Length: 134
Image (tube, one colour):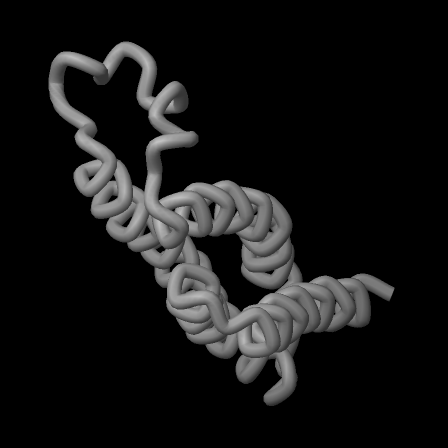
């Protein structure tokens, strides 16, 4: 049981790191090089559309992990014995990976569904953890 929440945390962090890939591809396409490494954000206006979406997606991935990581740690401490919590812990990294793809490829409806499902899974983890404390 405990390993489930640890895996969710690790996989979710890997998803955040994976969001760097489309971001880097967009920067390369815009002419990013060692010479302009001192100000990578200055290239934003030169990024292709997918590169701009990749920047926004990457920023949102950091926001998501800032909510999900404490939920996983909370569940590691409280050890909820719930199939719902186990399902929610694994659905989050999967949905966030789909979120990256749908954001970068510009599928807004899919992106919104993935975002909402990922957020809901994090809320479920908090709820299940709290139910163990009360």
